[in-house]
Structure formats: C-alpha cells, structure tokens
Image 1 (spheres, rainbow, N blue to C red):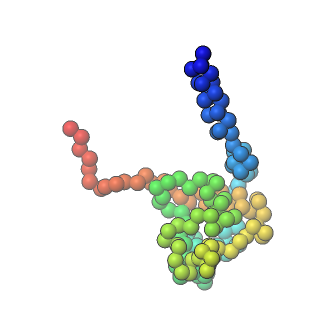
Image 2 (image 1 turned 135 degrees about the horizontal axis):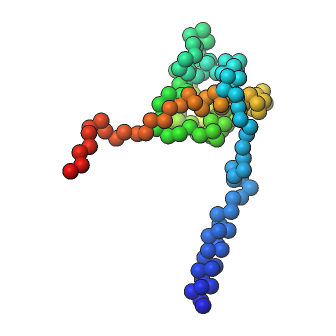
Image 3 (image 1 turned 45 degrees about the vertical axis):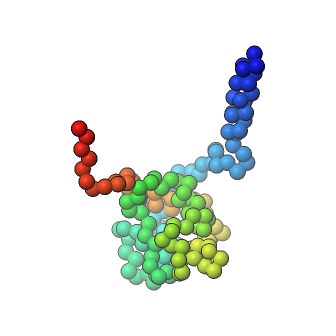
Length: 151
C-alpha cells in the first residue's frame, strides 16, 4: 500500500512540476506571414545596412558595421520561428560568439541592432520572419569528410 501511495505521489509531483508557468511560450502563435511582403519590409527598414543576404544587392547601401552580419545560408541547426522573432524584437537575447567584439555590441554588451519594436507592426514582423526563415538551409553537421567503413 505504501509503495502504491509513493508511486501515486511521485507521479502527481512529476505532472504538476511540468505545468508551464506564466513565462511559458506554450500557446504563443503569431499569424502566418507573407514572404514577398517580408522582403519589402527587409528593404524598407534598411536591414541591408547591417546585414547581407544571398540574392539581395547591398552594394548601394552604406554599411553600419565593420563587416555585415550574414543572414541565411547553410546552418547545422534549424532556425525556428521563435528564434527569428526573438532575434528581431530582442537582438541582445542571444549574440553569436563571432559578434561579441567591438563594433557589433555597445559598452553594455548589448547588440547595436536598432530597436524596431515601436516602429514595426506585427504584420511586418510576421512577414519579415516568413521571408527570412526559408533563407536558411539545414545541413547536418559532418564530423569528418573521411568515409566511414563498418565491417
């Protein structure tokens, strides 16, 4: 009887411990965006001043950084919708190691990316993410170029 009670108590603790709190992203979803409109947002907000993206000519845009931050291309982990939204609305949330040097961050260690939260509409945000997400191509990490032989 004690064992059954212990198992029941453990299971109830397990299930209540997994209950998402008020900070959980569970249930968060933005409407579907329009990639073509997102491309127009990317250009209109002059993202090419700090970023480069394959297929877009940035030669007429003066760079605001020592070297532009490349977006898209081959990656070894999926760029999720949530990661892209977060990168736009809170660019200091996660700064890649290669950009934690002078010119890319301010004195306080925050991203120099301009805050567009009071300028960009939600529609523009979801369109921009719809445009950016397919620019990334998932290529799983390959530890070695040597062939593997299994007897």
